[in-house]
Image (cartoon, rainbow, N blue to C red; front, side, top):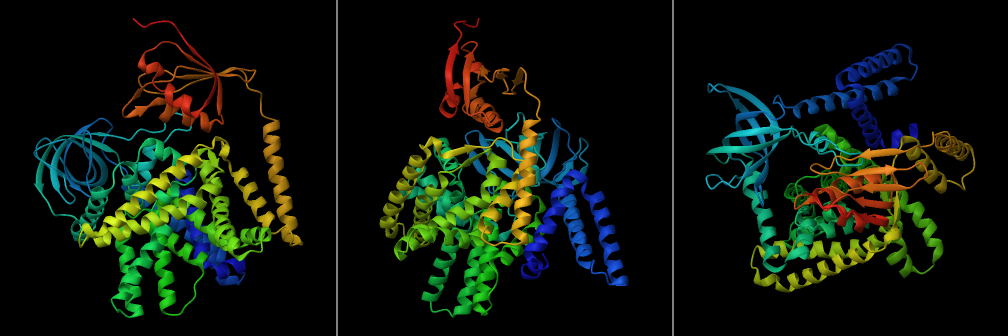
Length: 615
């Protein structure tokens, strides 16, 4: 353990800080921090007085306390003094680029003050998600100040087991709630960051304009998703296909995007005859700009920090550790945004990168035994090793958040990742050259369309393989520990001695817990689960003999499908992949609207529809 801390200090600090952040919500941020700080200071004092070597443990407890304090402070900023359903008058500032929707505008706003009935202004400082109907008097723009009259609401919490907790998601993004603006009066503009207002937002619009000039539909939306991280325009079937094949990560701007952007920027700067160090500094500045351009998600922020550290190391002839740079990037992100640790994108990004850095070589050594051909090793087995290492590390995270593990992703990534990388490279070149003339990029646009079309067809083909997914209903800590133990044991099986014996013992103990936990569980009797689907009904009946029947399937509308949002997530979270019966009580839309989606995603042995007609 001491050797690991000495070799990867940043990674060790990240693990300790992260543990403090993880424990803070359950134990209370400030009380936990006080206990940890007192214990840490006591150990450090004893180590100083007696020299008993406990200073590392004491320092670790102090770092955990820092994590708990950071979480508590940032969590307070996400709380609003406003009440659910209350109507308020306030001065707000638009702090994100507004997105136009079919019903109006959607943007993040910072509440600067609350205006009482008598005109008294009370200072406020919290962020909300604002929804504004189409208003000819004000088209919101980044940096605008406005007086608004609005209704405040907390985001919906998880309504059913396995469902999405929107309130928790906004809390982790330090957004206090949602306001629906009823009246607005524009005050003034230009109060935001000059960099975002004058460079970032115009650059985003330029990229969108270049793509829209030549591509349409999902082909255009895929390129925009790769270049800017915007996936809202992709159709639902395409998004589901990416999810089913485990290739959604290509839509999250991350390491591969940063590497391509860095290569293009560096080569362009070198073509301009800039010195190597100046070109490296320019590349880092370009990566920071690209990070802001794509919204600064944890995945691209991580990749940019690691790439910048690697560039600096190369320029000054210093070789760094990839795992240490991974820990450094996590420390920098968590110091500014501790809630990122609870974000699924953050977890997947760091798990995948850790897997690639730590496990690619041992996986590669095993795969290289299959062939002595250098061509096969370089073009097939090495990419397969990288994909396998990433999947081994991300499997527990995917199982926890999505209740399934897409095994087909091992093969899908071998095809989809190269295609999307090529599409991204072409798209970035289109954006750069398109700043000079749209006529010059017509050949690139044709190539982009062809590659985008091929990428979408490849994803759809792999998504059609229905047996390529393992359903994993509940992910527990013993399961994760057993999985990690078995993975490490598989790579260290040939190394005899106490470490291997300890791993075998741990695997047996964890297996015993898992087996006996199932063996001693009480047998289920009749169980009926009523699902909250809004205006409508849906209930799952589980009989003692193991049969399962769903009664009604909830409503469906252009903005909400009970089958997609409530029933299928609940079934996946419960480990149910097939139903014996579905009974539709009558033909009202709020009782059968979710049925089509349900039939497409869950096996059904028998469908029964009542002949009763509602009055």
